Image (cartoon, rainbow, N blue to C red):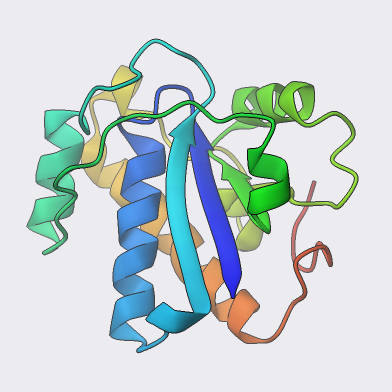
Length: 162
C-alpha cells in the first residue's frame, strides 16, 4: 500500500482538494486498496476548521464530496507513517524540511513536481481562483497516480524535481 499525505499551509483549500481529488482518481481506477490518502496543515491557523466553502464548492462541481474533513496539523510522526509527503509550494517544502530535517528517505515533493510543469499549485486563498487551483491539483494528482502506478518505490524520487 502506498500512503500519501498532501500538505499546505492551513489544510482548508489546496491539500484537501488534492486529498479528495486523488481519492476520486484512485476510486475511479479501481485501486482503493492500493492507497491510503490524507491531508494536513503545516501551520495552526485553521486546525479543526472544515474545508473552505469555495474549495468545497469547486470539489462538488466535479462530483467530489469532502464531508467531515477538518484541518489537522502535520506532526513529526507523519514521516514514519506516510510514503509520500506532497506539498503545494516552496513555502510548504521549506516547512516540511524543518519538520522532517534532511528528508532522509526522499519522501517530500511538490505536487506539480510530478508533472511536466513543476512549480507551485495556485493558492486560491490569495487568488480566489479555485478553478485554476483545481486544474493544478487534477494535473498533479493524475501524474502522481500514473507514475506510482508504474511501480516507483516510495523513496525513488522518480520524476520528482526536488
